[in-house]
Length: 279
Image (tube, rainbow, N blue to C red; front, side, top):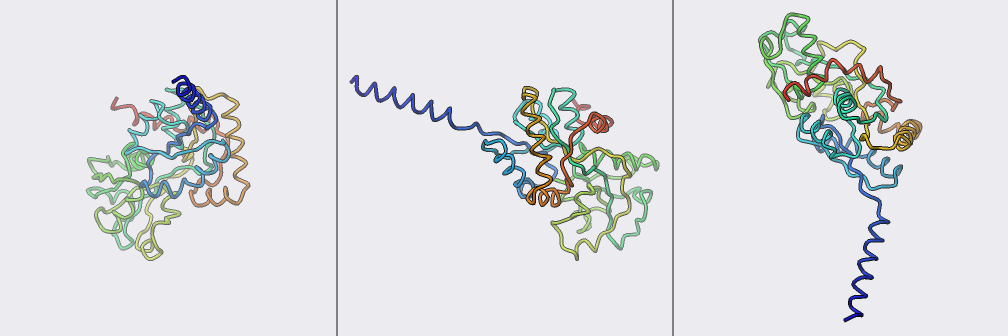
């Protein structure tokens, strides 16, 4: 009996030792600006790089929509996030999240119509349907701002059709479900999920002028040691100079990782309200 008790205690001790030697899994949250399959395809190189750099298993996660992602970030469900500029600013100011890096690419709205459409300017959208990826996005807010300057109100003068993700916006225009679509320039300029024949059937009627917020921010939770934040920032900036990093940055349209600044973070201040006004 004593022998079996000894073996049982030995197994418990071994299991505890093995568990202590196994690095904890890091959960990387990516805001849902694309379909789940497209997110995985685009962000997988970054996940692998983080895994190799941090020496920990990294799993990718997201959320059904923008509000859910903001809530999960606030509740600490992620160990690191790749997030939108206004979501990054809210997480920083309200919840103490720390900015690690940001994309050099700046977000901007472009409004697309069918090539043979009679719509030639924003004023022509009165009474028409506009597809958007999310009402909680900077893309939507920039479109709302541009239309407002021309006396048009989204939801009143221009009907809004919300789609599952930004990648569905252009398809909605292409098949004629709506007369126009508002989508980030990073998707329109590098629309990898369409062929040349499809793209030739569409044209751009508006592009938001700069300056605009940087498109993506990498953030870490409040309790993360400053040394860990600095180490990851250094690693991401160094990735810019590698073949694998350059390939990811080109395909994702991040352009490069750059160090975040307070000025860049503050550029999202006019857009944060949409994430909290319904609370």
